[in-house]
Amino acid sequence: MTLALRYAVRSDVGLLREGNEDSAYAGPHLLAVADGMGGHAAGEVASAATITTLASLDAELQGVDLVGVLADAVASANMRLHELIAADPLIEGMGTTLTALLWSDGYAALCHIGDSRAYLLRGGEFVQVTHDHTLVQSLVDEGKITEDDVATHPHRSLLLRALDGRTVAEPDLNTIETMPGDRFLLCSDGLSGVVTEQTLRQTLHAVRDPDKAALQLVELAIRGGGPDNITCIVADVLDTQASGVPPTFTPVLAGAAANGGPAPTRKSSPATRAMRLTKTMPQPAVPDEPTTGIWQSPSGYRDGYTGTFEASSVEANGYSNGTGHAATGLEGAGFERTGFDGAGTAADEDDDRSGRRRAGQHARRNRYADEDDAGTGDGGGYSQRGKRRWPIVKLTLVLLVLLLGGGAYGAWWYNQQQFFVGQQGGNVAIFRGTNQSIAGISLSSLVSRSQLPVGELGASDQAVIAQTISKSSLPAAQALIATLQAKVTGCRNQWTALVNWQSANEKYQQAVAAAHTPKAKAAVTGNPGSMPAVPDAADCAPAAEFGITSGLPGTTTPTPAPTPTPAPTHTASATPKATTTKAAARPSSTKATT
Image 1 (cartoon, rainbow, N blue to C red):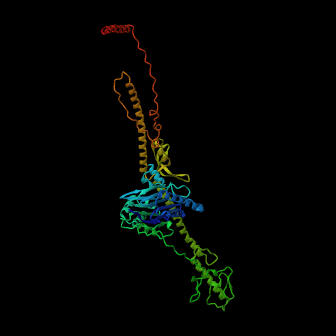
Image 2: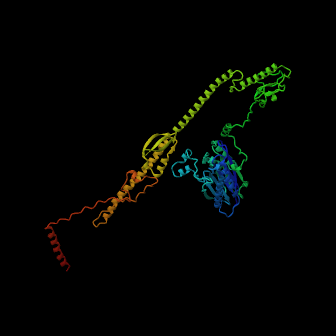
Image 3: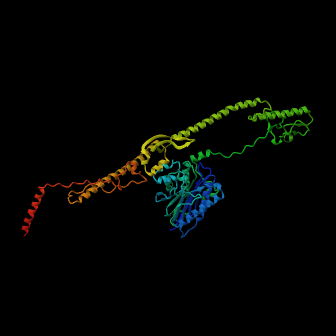
């Protein structure tokens, strides 16, 4: 049996991002997805450099340690990022996630760091084979928050591990034995963070062609809003001798690593069409219009704006009209006169110049109402224009105030819908708002203070309460306090059970000791059984926090000193009588024996 891969890869920028910082590679022996971060094109650099470094592993590897080879390649990629940062300090702070599958002869080495994911669909069972290196996932693992809280947690995007070129890479490495019919999905969080695992499973199970399945997954993320770059690889494990479809042998780069490849095709959907409506094609720049003047017309010159002339013809020192007469304000080099051949009088020439000046001034007043040139023409028109601008300015200011006020109200309203659980005066309390302040003004207020002391919580719960726990509603915050109260009650009962057991055990031990005396005849009862479990220090507060300071196993309870018993008093008549009886009896017994 010969196994091979049939794969497809898709990468889309999404609906909200300006550029694609994801990179992916799919080949006969290597599948890899990287999600860059850092902004200012640095995320693209990090993901593309990592993918291109790993691409050299896409070859037939026989008799080698796949995990070791993949680990060395990840270390090389991290060193490559370090070199890029050293060459250009402006990109410091960039980084990338990485999920890669190195495949050879039915075995796969899996490398994972960050929050990109790998899934395996085998025999109808769909499982995630990677573990997110995020803060919220660590809180879920510790039981401090639930899976439902992850989507609304304020630090849901915080990574605990990534390739950044500054720290030593610590990826998760393991091996997977593959089988014919297995289907792998590698994706960035732009897909797994929007589409549920149930929908992922249904799509991968229903759409058998890898390329159509990958396209369908991207479309599902787009319909979900497409808030991030979306990249996925769908790969099937085939038995080349039994399968009716051929494996894939062509390597494919996608996303930022494709370096300007063709844009992916995208189906029409309501979300896609809405995104397109927000974007317009670039418009050509409108050229500046030169200074106004007078064009030649069939009827000669006319007053008013009838055309334009070259602005370069205007000079400050006058112009030469070709007749030897001088004037100020216009240069005749770019302005041709008609109807004047030099034979007229100077008065005619002056009238013509005045007409031209009046025409230019009238046109400028009509076209540029915001100019204020009191030295030309009638200034009354400019004053009227200035008065007309005031309502527009006032309306703009009113709209600006309304927008600012509306924005402030919206922010206040949103803040009032938030709740968090913290502590006040040593007790657990519920607050409305967010645990922040602006210019010394707190954005939260106390809603209620419970009767639950913080000191009675376990060490882990105390640490979480100290950092506060955000909740989306007041009932959710009250439910959290009820859960904490139940835990505290359980811990109190455990400590009380230990004290009761210790008391019963002491009584039982005393009864056992008394049963070993010669005169004891009654059977010993009241065995308390085995000692109850001691509460875990991480989950329960010390017994002293519950007012229990003694009576616990391992502590010595003071035993009162025994009271001296007085010696018995005998009468003189009793003692000889008893002695005589015994003395008389002894010889009689001796004679009988003889």
